[in-house]
Amino acid sequence: MERRIFLGVLGATLLGLAAAILLPGGRSADPSPKLPWDIRIAADGSLEVLGLRLGESSLQAARQLFEEEGKVSLFRVGDRGFAVEAFFQQVNLSGLRADIVLALELPPETLEAFYQRGLRISKAESGASKVTLAPEDLASVAEAPIKQITYLPAAKLDRDLIALRFGEPSERVPEADSPFTHWLYPGRGLDIAFNAQGQTVMQYVPLRDFPKLVEPLRRQSTSGSSPASRANP
Image (cartoon, rainbow, N blue to C red):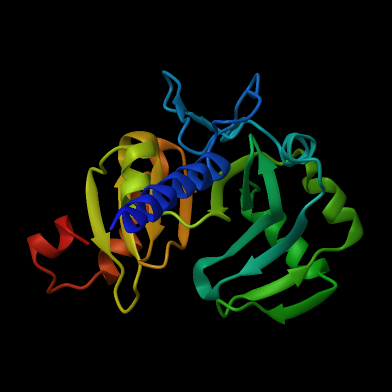
C-alpha cells in the first residue's frame, strides 16, 4: 500500500517537472518573454503577440526574431483569391517550441502578378494550388506586413491547461466532421482549436478581422449541436 502511495506521489512529481519543462518556469527568466498567451491589444484594436504587431511588423522582423528565413509560398484557393504565407518550423521562443505560419498582407494585384510569374505550381494537402515564387518576388515580400499568425505548439495541450493560460473562452464551437473544438476569444483576436489528443492550433488576427475568421467555422459547424454540447466539448 505504502509503495503504491509513494509511486503515485512520484508520478505526480514527474508530471509537475514535465510541465515545468514544457512551460516557462524552472529556468532562467527571459528578459522579454514572447508567450502565446501574452496578447496585447492597443487602443486602436491592433494586436501584438510573440513579439510581433499584426499589420505593422514585417516578415523581415519575424525572420530576425525567429532567427531563420522560413519558407514563403503563394496559395490560390479556388475563387477565394490568393494568399502568401511564410512557414517557420520548430521555432523556439521563450523556451516553447512551435511551428509558426505568418500570413502576409499584400495588394490583390501584386498577388496576381506573383502568380503569373510563379516558377512551379503544385497541390497542397488542403487542395489549394501552391506556387513557388520567382526570386525577385520572393525578395520583395520581406517588408510585407504580417496580417495573421498561426501558432502550432509542439507540446500537447489539454483543455485544463488552455483554460489556465488563456482563460475561459467567450464561445465554444465544435468543428463539423472533425475531432477539433474551437475556443473563441473575440476580445483578444484568438481562435484556439484542439482535440482530445492534445493537438492544438492557435490563430491570431486583428480584432476587426475576427468575425471573418470565425464566420466559415460557424457556417460549417454542426447545425444540430445542442447548447450543452457547445458548452462542454
